[in-house]
Every structure is written in structure tokens, then in C-alpha cells.
Length: 511
Image (cartoon, rainbow, N blue to C red; front, side, top):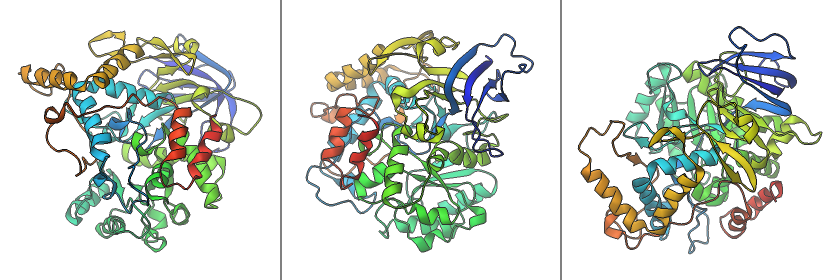
């Protein structure tokens, strides 16, 4: 379905990066942008009967890109080991904490086993309410499932290959890194969790190994890299720079320090943002951009608000476009039709308003030309089944199809009802999931096969071991973490983590 969006367009166009104008964005039937026009001139051919969403004075911006997440864990609250008094050294340290398995591994495995579709719907909605349209860090699955966000790890960009970008959360040996480097030479991208830890700690070796293997090119996207020392950044040639994904909240929460963004910028490495996962991250990149502003000021990085906005739009969009051969993160011809409409308030510059915006300011989120979430009035333009719900006391609508009846919307109350039933009685939910799997005799790739998700974070070494069923009586699944940055979230921020109070400043944008 074609779609026209009118408003104050902020295209983030390379040819006119400061442009903000009254205009329209024309998204074609294939979900890509056919034309961006200033003013109210004639529409291109094929749009005479297309629905028009008139945002008035509100900002029409590229959909926000979250380039680092582990979405299977995003129903969980912030976590901190109660007995820990000093920051962790690297990513192999905290999974051994005494409370890790009981707090993270077993609850997430229980929800994934019992209600995988509902879990994915809930965590995608959590991203949508913060304006996110594309996200990295999905669990692998045996078959298709409900997907309303763009899956960065699996995007085919109009073709058939799902290997346009390779990803790894595991530390790879030099031979495997060399294979990834060859794939990069052939045009693929490589997203690598790399060097996550305190500066100079032993995981710095992961970045050095990547450099030695020839991975540090234009399609290399290093997640974290906070252990990397200034001299090592110089191994990434300025004329061959890719991107680093900065997750300052998670870094400060676990390690008390963060990535040397100044050194990365000197090498012309593109800085992108990722909200990371629920146990040590923000709710969405709309929240993470504020942490980047706070951390940037503390570290005297000299970041402007436009620099920050680029970290969740054009910076990740440009490096992904090198792999996909289709633009994202900019509102330009032939780019993906991913759009966020943001409520305009006051007279501050658009970049400042984007940085300071909250979930309450999201008017509409469009993914591939399809309105997926937003205020009731603009959501009337969606061709997808949609339903209403309240978020922070405001009426909203979501367009997520019910997997059991695709002609109907999947109501928020239905999604949360399934998850709350697991939370209330994990043992019964686990037993039902195992019985469902035993009763199925068809191919696991079939549409009606039980959905199996493989989570992408370490399981930990402490506490109990074995299967879910072995410990069903011991498992406690915490209440659903809220979709938005709220008072409960900030209360936890103030009591936990190793940020030295720096992250307390985040609440000033919200409360």
C-alpha cells in the first residue's frame, strides 16, 4: 500500500544535512521511498488515491535505528549482583555472579519456551514506543514469526540472501575472523561484540585479533569496544572506517567506564548507538541518546545534538547501506520507508527536540511504509489489523497481527495476558511448552511448528544447572518490565550499577 506523510520533514540528506522543511514523503507499494518533496506540489504518479497522514507542524524524521540489543531479554528489569562492590573487568566476569542465572537465564528461558511469540511482540512494542524501526540482536528461530520491526541481522534488502550481514556475540578465533574478513571483501557486513570491558583488560585482544585478521574495514561494526586503547584505534584506517556501536548506559552500569569515543572519532569511525538489553540497558535508543549526551558532556567529547541524532539515524544507516545496497536512516529516494513522526514542542532546534523527546512525544512509527504504532488518528491509515491500548494514560494503537488468527490484531491485553500467566505459574507454563513440543511431529520449519528461539547471551556458571523442567519449582519470573522509562526504572538506576551517579541525570529528561 502506498502512503504519503506530510509534515516538517527532517530528511538527514547528505546533500543538505541541516534541512528542515514543510513537505511530504511518498512511500511506494514496495515499502521504499519514491519521492521527498518540499511544499505541496503535485504527487508522483501512483499516489492519487494513497492515504495521507498529515502531521502538521510535527517532525517527520528517519525511523530510529538500534544497532545493539539482545531483544529476547527485554521483559526483564535492570539487574545488579547484590554482593558485588566493584565494577566488572570484562564480559566474562558478570555471567558468573551468584544471582545471574536465577535473575536472567532461567526467567528468560522460561518465557522463550512458554510464550515465544508473545515475548517477541512485547519487546518489539517496547522498541516501537520509543520510535525505533530497525533493531539488531534478535534470537535465532526455527521458523517465521510475528515481526513488525526491521530485523537488521536478517534483512534481505529486496533479495534472497540472509547473509548480507554476519553477526557474532561469541568471541571468535583468528581463523573464524579471517573468514569474516573475506566475506567483508566480498561485500558482506560483520557485526561483532568486541572488546567489551574495562580499558586495557584482556578482552582488548578481541579488537586486536580483528585488526590482525583484516576485519577493520568499511563494513565492520564493532559493538562496545570499550576496552580498546587509543593507540589501537589507530589501526583502523581513516579511509576505511566502519562503525562502532556505543552503549554508554550498559558500559557504565557494568564497568563504570565507557568507549573511548574521542579516539574512535579521530579515526573517522562512525559512532552509532545501541540500547543493549533489559538487565543493563535503556528501554530504547530514544533513551540511550540522552545517556550519550550526559556521558559526552562528562567526557568533554564536544558532541552537538545533531551529532547525537546522527548516531541513531544516518550513521548506522550509512554503514548498513554499504551491506544492503539500499539506504536506511535517511529520508531519500529509494531508501527504506521507515519513518518516525515526533511531536514538536516549543522553539528549540529540531536536533535538540529529538534528543530531549520521550515516549510521550512519539506520534507515529512507520516500518516499510506500514504504520505500526502511534496516536489513534494517524494509525487509521494502516492497512494492518490494529487495536487500541493505553500507554502512560494516553490512547494509542498498535498493528501486530495475531499469529493464531492473522486477520485480527493481537491486542496488547492478549500479549501481556499470555506473559503474565507464565510469570504467575512458571511450572505449569514449562510443562505445557514441553508437552506441545513432544506432541508435534512435523518439520520444525513449518509455519505451524512450535516456535523455538535461541537466546544469544551467556547462561552463567553459578546457581542451579540442568533443564527448565528440572528446576521448575525454583524458577521465579519477575513482573514485566515497563515499556517506557518510568519512576520505577529510575528508582533502580539510583540504587544500582557502577555509574557513580552519572546515570541519575537521565531521569531529568523524563520526570
